[in-house]
Length: 282
Image 1 (cartoon, rainbow, N blue to C red):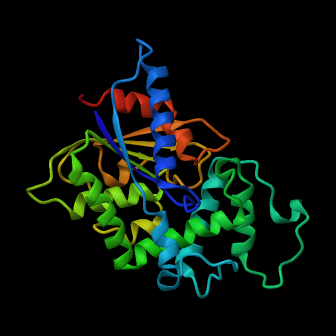
Image 2: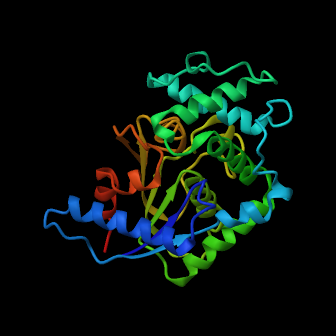
């Protein structure tokens, strides 16, 4: 079985080969735990790595800035932050508000700063920090707003997919958006059918993303099954169910994990991930 993964944001400090090994190891362990025989199928795994592109094109895409997100000059990233904060409220997440943390009034009273603080304090985005939350919103916006960003990331994906058609394509976080658009945009006669698409921690249903998806929400051609896995306390995976938007063929699965809820390794180790992959044709 050949599996291809597409990572999400905040992997800029990772080495591609180390991240690929981490994904493979966690996924294999999860498959072994879920298998009745206690063994994992023989898998070949390859990761599509693109985090370095955001550093290389930082000035062009304005995807990585240290100052707070200004909702006037950056309405796209601000809209994403607003939706993810709404996701926190929807599950009743016990996250401290700004006044509870004793944080002073910022010099520029932007509501986005309070939202970033709430998201960074949530167990779901544990490890991100405030800079990571801002990067998450800005990089997602950069991908959706700059055609050359789409093109360069797609090139990386094409390179991996051409090696050998995979049985399973796993897109985590922004990687799920890349997978969805690529499956639509590359639908030519030369591409082999994909038996299984798995989206994990996906923001595909988030309003500011839906409004700029290319094409609008629909089932991509040329794939067998689509399993979407959303952590209950993952604010980025919002809304939790994609079937109402993308079609009844999407199989929505929920996970109760709370700490590190948006982390790729949490999803890769989950039972719904193992069940989906074990159910794919060998």
